[in-house]
Amino acid sequence: MKDTLICKGMAFYSYHGDAQEETVLGQKFTIDLELEYDMSELIAQDRLSGFGYVEAYQTTKRVVTEERYNLIQKLAERVVEEIFKLKPDCRATITVIKPGAPAGGYMDYAAVRLVREGPAYRG
Image (cartoon, rainbow, N blue to C red):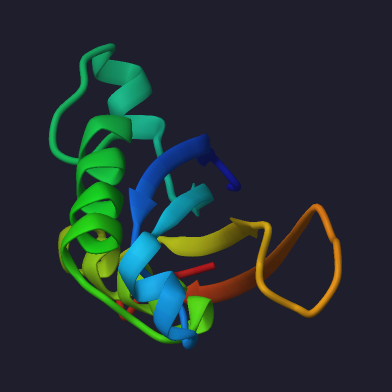
């Protein structure tokens, strides 16, 4: 079974980056998160219990806005680590989008996508 919780376009202002001006000025980061796990029990009960999109958003927000990293790869990994503390039986796909990344020229954004499986995931 492949049920997926999708939190798309979560936007936060924060200070991640390797360049000094990034850590001083900050910028908007956009996060897309997909969590695959069995939702059959939730569906049968027709009520949210435990982990859902609110917990996914709040966890992502906390990591992105309260922690600081040089690399968006590390930021993505940290969000997933914290998600797995709450929902260890899922597979996570996270995309961190950094608009206007300083690359010496123009690009819409730089992004990284990680795919990880929680310690209790049974895919």
